[in-house]
Structure formats: C-alpha cells, structure tokens
Image (cartoon, rainbow, N blue to C red; front, side, top):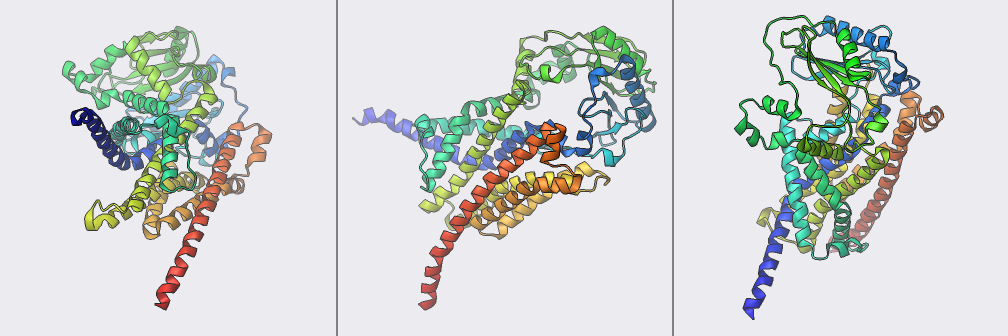
Length: 546
C-alpha cells in the first residue's frame, strides 16, 4: 500500500519544491519585474506620450510630409549636411531625418565624445536650430522604453533585464505546476478575506495574462539573442560582424581607418537612392564621416498607418553608398521580406513584442494585459508578507522581523513609489525650465530622485500609512496634471478637443482614469487605517489603566 502511495508523495514533494522556488524566486524578481512590466506597458504609447510632452511641437499640426517635392527633400539633406559638417565634423555618426507630420523640422542625430547619441531640430526653411522655447528637449515616452529593457544602464541593464526575464519564465512555469485548480481559481474571488483575497487577485491576474506573459518574456529574450547567447557566433566567426553581414545579406561593417576623406554631397546620393528604390527617402545616416571608411545609407519612406498594421511587413527599401566616392555598395529594394525564415521569425517576434502591428486596438490590448501583468507582480509581492504575518513564520530566527520589515519597505517603494515617480515625470516635463541645459537628462534624474524619495519615505513610515500616503500623492498628481498643463502651457482637454489633438485628449483622459482608480484605493486604505486606529485605542487605554 505504501508503494502505491509513493508516486503521489513524490508528486506532492515536487509540487512543494516548485512552491518554494516560485515563492522566493518570484519575490526576489517581483520588484524588478514590476518595474519592467509597468514601464513597458506605459511605453506601448511612447510616441503618444512624447507628443503630449512636446506641446510646442504638437501645436503645429498642419504639415503634410507627403506634399514635399523631390527638390524640397533634397534641400533638407543639404541643410542637414551643412550643419553637421560645420558643428559636428568630429562625430563618428550622423543622421538626418526628414520632416514628419508630428515634427515638421529637420531632425539631426550625432554621437558625442562619450559615444552617446545627441540630436537637435533645425528649422525647415532656415536650416538653423529651432529655439529651445519652440523645441522642448525631452526623452518623452522613450524614457519608459529604456527603463523597460535596460534600466537606463546600458549593456549592464540589458543583462539584468534578461536575468529577471528568465526568472519570470521560471516563476510562470512553477506557478502553473503548484496550482492544481488554476483555471477554476480564475473565476474565484473572495472579498475581504485577507490572504485569500490577495491570492485570488494574484491567480486571476496571472491566468488572465498567462499566454501574453509567456509571449512577452520569450520574445523579449529572442530580441537580444545574440547578446545573451553569443557562443554559437563566437565559435564559428572570428569577427561577429561577418555573421551579421551574412545573415542580413548586406556588406560587412567597415572599421575606421584613421585616413581622412571628405564626405561627398549627400543630397546627390539621396536623390539617386530615391530613383533606385522607386520611392521617397525618409532617413539618411553616415557612419565614420570624415574617414576613408565612411558609409552612408538611405532608408525608404513608408506610411506608418499601413506599415504598423502588418505583422510580417514588407521591406521599406534602402540603398548603401561609399560616402567618399558615391559608389553603390548595396541595394535592398522595397517589397516582400526575403531574408530567410530565421530572420523572418525573429522579425515577427520583435514586432509582436513591441506591439508594432494592428494599430491602436492592439496597443490598448497590450496595455490592458501589461497592467494586469504588473498587478500580478504587485499582488505576489504583497501576498508574500500577508501570508507570513498571518502564520508568524520564523524563517530567519531572531532577524525575521527585521527581514520582513526590509521586504515591506521595498514593496511600498517598488510599487507605489514607482507609480509616483512615473506620474511625477510628467509634472517635471512641465515644471523644468524649457531653456535649461541637458533638460531631458534632468527629467530622467528627477524621475529617479522621486523614486528614491519614496523609498526613504517608506522606510520612515509604518507600512499601511506609507501605502496610503504614497497613493494619495499619486492621486493628487494624476488628477491635477491637466490643471498643471493648463497653467504652464495654456492647453487642456477642451483646447485639445477643439484643435482635434486626439492623442493629447487620450493621454489626459487616461491619466484622469488612473487618478480616479487610485482615489478608490486611497479611500479603501483610509478605512483600513481608521479601523486599525479604533482597534488599537482600547488596547492603549487598558495598558494605561493597568
């Protein structure tokens, strides 16, 4: 009889082991994963957020890039090259972007001495930089994208995100194993039941978004496959650039020679590229300008609405030239994607991860699923402490209370503190002077300073009060953001509505919705605080009498 029960015991032992791994692995990763999920979810609308954060540019909305003539596009390249040669001659990279509907100017890019990318916007008519009071410097929504995949920490951040993404996959798989009634629990929610309520919320948000989370985690790893798993390339190629050249069927990247050579007239090459592609150009870059290895590439124009509506989209086309003599190095004609099945698969996964298909309907679906995923991370972290406080587990001996307090502080700062930093980032966009140097960097620094301040606050306050106070701050900042916008820019919902700026209307309405949801949470926490104070007062009076 005992032999018959042995498989069942082994199965239960395996489930318990998976439960331990899910609990502790999930807790350690939940703080980072909540950050990754929340910022990635917000980043789904990065361009829309950037639009709102540049009110001066948003005010100009009648420019039609499709109406530009060939000569006007060529003039854009001439003005861009003239500015870069005059002011950025020592840079290792140039980029010239043609005007768009949302940015009717010449956007220039270059690398500074620290190999960091910088940019400026030139007036379309004069070729001179647009004054800062007409061109608010900001990372906009791209700040959330960078937080999502590299924590603003470069390559080290990419590795950290990859590490936590692997833990996420482990947590998802172990979570499936330890929940015997996972799909039944999805339809169960026991209100006002303490630990059970948190568990039900955790299970429901997990099951609802399970396919989405598996897809997002896996595709996120695939995007950086060559970074996370370089052994195959390094074992077969002495120079990794050769592998990528063969994979993409393009010329190999040329290293700098140190031999000076002037860049030819880029406008002439741009015009030739348009003829070869049979369509207008959208962007032109130059690698190693001023060096004999200089290469320039022209990218074809595409209609964003049609382009981002496709999952396996056509090539936009590109032409690569030797920038020192104008010789054609490579033509990638527009049309059906033909880089092979592996590259097509990786391309589709990249498009799926970034929600670059299906338009606003898909982006809103990703947004809802992403928020549900962030909710799963948050409820999991909170459930960890709720469960242990109710059972009074003595896991760390005499230090148990201190360890739990540290986890409690990090929970508050990682969840509500991050929310305050995110909404505070939008306030900083309106409060930091437009003409200050390194303005975009100050917005990002302010984001981290706010987050650090919330960590300090959570360490100084009891947990329930810290939750209440930080969500109160978030609520006020969210509900008053349109008022701040009106005071600082003169724009608000009605003016956006009247001018047909639906992107800004959608942004402010979304912020208000989250402000109202947060208000409901604040009222709930207030009732809990009031109840706790009433409960503790008789105890204090009895202690005083005794």
